[in-house]
Image (spheres, rainbow, N blue to C red):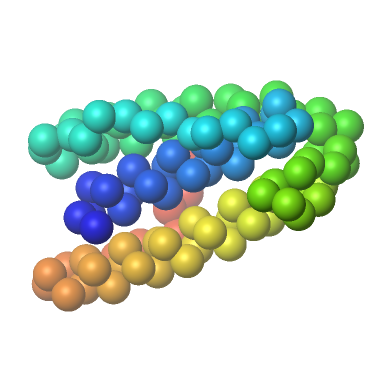
Length: 114
């Protein structure tokens, strides 16, 4: 898996988790075309993040508490979003190792958007 594929997997999975909680049923995430430059990748990630944040902000307490059948497991929206966070942390760890292997040593441990 290339760096771009890993980044797109992370953003697409978060989109899937958010939309699944929103809809109450498994909903595939967006699958954008592979970008050919880092600038295109940044643009795709920024747009995907904005869209997913909008979905997350729109979730109601009822959606967060409702049980969702997620591949045979019944999980609340809260639990599914916790899984999303764990999934993202796992893959960001992979991403950081990948970047260190190609010589990038200064990586952010946290990026504030505020």
